Length: 86
Image 1 (tube, one colour):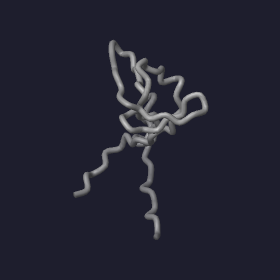
Image 2: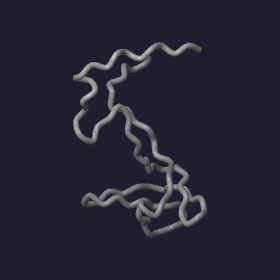
Image 3: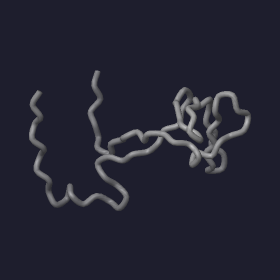
């Protein structure tokens, strides 16, 4: 497979607003996602967002877990508009 050459970057394209790039990485917690907590693998049951506070509930636990206590490979997102494929 051959890769097509990247289009030339103009001055306008190279300057993105602060905090923006073509891609960014962010962990996505959703039901069924496998996360690592204290060295063991757990499964996300559901996620709650209350007053700007994210709480992740794990299968088999009644209390929410702080997302900072969980390890999850970040998902890569693009900020560039991509045409939908049908």
